[in-house]
Image (cartoon, rainbow, N blue to C red):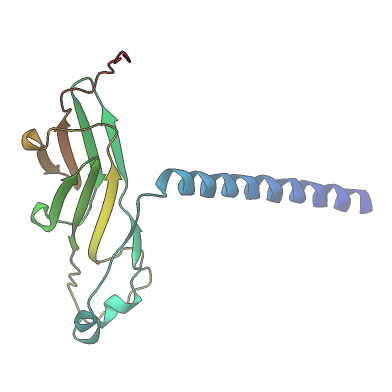
Length: 167
């Protein structure tokens, strides 16, 4: 009996250790891959003090997951902005930085309910995305479909390396 209890204890210990390792690995990947995607959502005080008191309980940080893809001719930036309209997004490019700002608006269908899970953030935000190359801002194009904002940025000329002799 004592041997079977010891064996059960060892098995439980192994399972807990394996579960902890998987959880730790998941957190490490989330932090390393999503570090820049963590975005602060700011709300003004008037909203929180008036009809939208529920906003005070909602998170102020959320992930705006994105990707930057480079092809031979362009840089393509995609950012997930679910729950937003395209009119609520603003894109600015300065040098090799793309700035995405906007506002995710809180809309409540009913006022006589209780939230049990609150994981979505609301308010004004700004996200900075570094670009790997210089781009031609005048030929940039942005589109929005299914909650994903896509910005196509043609590469600027002169990105090829050139050796300059020293005289």
